[in-house]
Image (cartoon, rainbow, N blue to C red; front, side, top):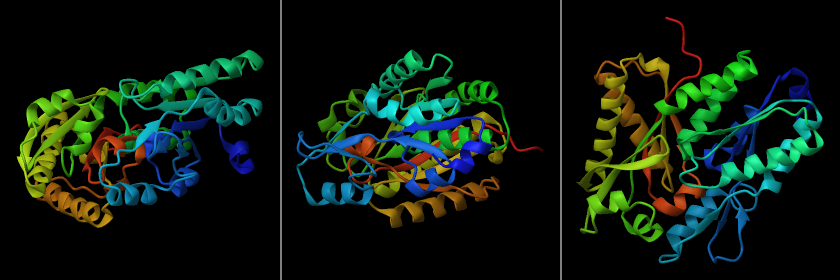
Length: 309
């Protein structure tokens, strides 16, 4: 724990590794991350971003056709080891976890919280089900850090996080159906898209679950449809573009992700949205094991601190 941060901070933001924040960005924003694990052989599980980098993970997926990696959630002990220094220093913790519909990570965090309270009954640890995952979870976590750093109080930040999480959406597509079908978690999507050659699904995540949002033939068609979903969502919300955090999430191909981000910004501006920035974040192993190497799409969520008019 950074001593200077300990002196100035009123509370600590913690997230599980599903947030997919770059290591340096998490460090810069004083966000502690409890990694997920990933394995290519069902035996050796490596801590993401600690024992295996994201680039290496995707490289193995691309090179090892027919091998389907698996992820595993952090244990209660993993969380406890992260919580402990803050608890001992008397610093309250807000811990943000992947949607409980996808993982038991939040239960591990709650178990760790109970472990901390046994020896430190005055400890303040709030565990939040983000109801989202991957890049969108990262945006949510960044909003928590921004609220903290703006001087917003602990309880106020917790309340605001609970308010904005229902506004989170992911609109994305994948390179092919292979990993989605193998994972067996997306029956709704599979029912819509089927296994017709060349047909790819467009998928929406909201409030912890995924829903089919159409199909398309070819990458350009499906990615354009995700832009359409984003535009529809912004129109329905009726808020200013600055009221939202918007990010592009990509997998193996960063160049494709950057080109898609630039194109999306041009489209939004042509529709009257004066978008100033759009984060470009790499989707990590926690979700990448289910989507394959080529997921691409958007995360969007209302900001914690709404900019003044």
